[in-house]
Length: 161
Image 1: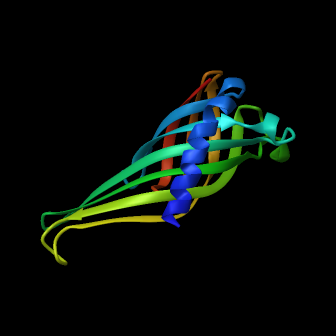
Image 2: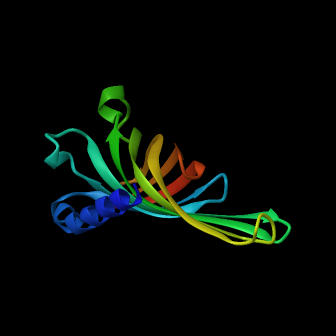
């Protein structure tokens, strides 16, 4: 499964320049209620999807926790997700954008500490899901509140291009 996730991400990064040349999107930073933080880029691909309000998001997230007894746990995720914007379906103000998305992520874990045999390093892969709402502050700036499978409740700020 890890090979599949890495191959999928590499394929996406190779294709991204051709999508970005004609698409709009955003770049953002975020922090979660659990202390995880990250960055993401999102590209509107509705022109390539028969006008459906969809986009592709790539992300990097990191979470570090001090467990106690000189032990720390670090997790870093990289992934890609498809996002669907429900604004037209929900018939909301054009400044409010509810959305949901799903994709794949690869997560590396590092544990350092004296308990349970000392250090641990590993990589997992799995599904990534997210859902939330974006609020347009200005034409180039929005705020994002969502729940996702890496970080729980997350608050973000996006710069639109």
